[in-house]
Image 1 (tube, rainbow, N blue to C red):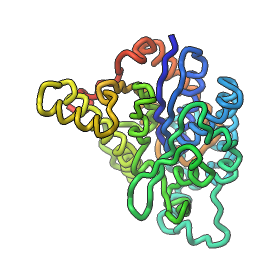
Image 2: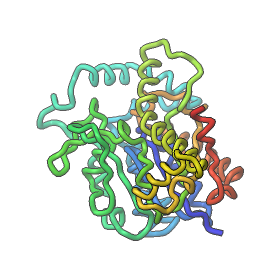
Image 3: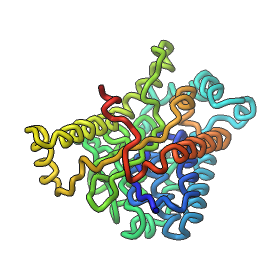
Length: 352
């Protein structure tokens, strides 16, 4: 039996290569059909590559386009550390620690704190633009295939904007991945946008559409919890980054948990209230049919840092891809039969 699911793909710079591995493993399973994708930043890039490749060549096409994307990202000179460092890092954790203290990263990090991306004047260029420009947008924007939703943050209003269908373009992908300390805001239709991770990382609500399946598989690349209290400046900044880029996702998951609990109390005033909200949203029993799943490797991601997010070296990207494949393989071995039947993320326990 075919399992129809939606994908919710987080952003996290170079750590998005973990999602590359997850998608690569999902593509091995002929019985899984992706109906909708919501992505932010690197998640949006992954989603666009997956959809364009899928429409142009099926599963093999999706895999080839994802490979192309991450090969190109691994060659972005503006955002990578010196190549000599990749040969002395035996494990990702060692890489994260070394990169935080490496002179090239320290200098670059200091510059982003004291120098605005607008200071470069006519010499400014976004290193991601040549890559985003190469997507086949006739396929990315097509009505066929998985529905794709790309999130970005409106700088003026602080609200999320979801781009979908013909709205998706080079600029909307760049807007979704626009870290304001590195890149100038991206202007679209007279409004300026920053990274979508501030308001939806990724946004789940576009996937509530009753034409889409109830299963939402979140690929999480920002650790939700850390046991140790951060003490060094680097550790503190890293944890601030993780909390900031998880906050919107946790808000949406808490809302889903709350509404599902109300719907379960169907005969109560709260249950009637939840059903009324459903009707206002178009009906279809949306809340009680939502089933949330998550693929993550928090142990690995806790060994990395904000530094490794900014340095897409081929070594790191392939280590993360392998980890993503392994995590997806473990999820499918344990929970594949649960898809379309029950959620595998205990939202009530998460927020109790």
